[in-house]
View (cartoon, rainbow, N blue to C red):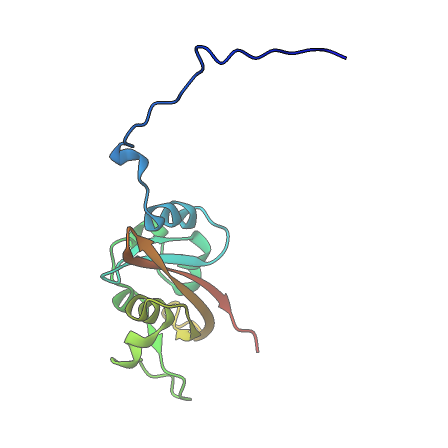
Length: 153
């Protein structure tokens, strides 16, 4: 059996320090970076409803073009939202303000629902299941993260 002695003299004591601003990354920034390279259809919007990040598959699904072209556009203006009538008319406000990404932003709670979009000129309308969660920036909501899934009939 071995005997080990430890000396307490000269013990290392870490010094307290204040983290630099660069070390503080908000949830919104972290998720935006992740979403930009994600395989799953998803997007992040900020408190103004502007697109901060969209995955390539999410951009294609929503008919937004290249992901970089969608950045900075307001979600309600970027999407061709349709109502659920047989005529598939344009979804007007205030109903358009109740799609899950915007509802989660306003309510500061998880939101889930169906969205119907026209992904491109002459395309067939597409129904999507959307699950949105608020993202925190310090002690308040700084945006939302939404995952999208096509509804198959």
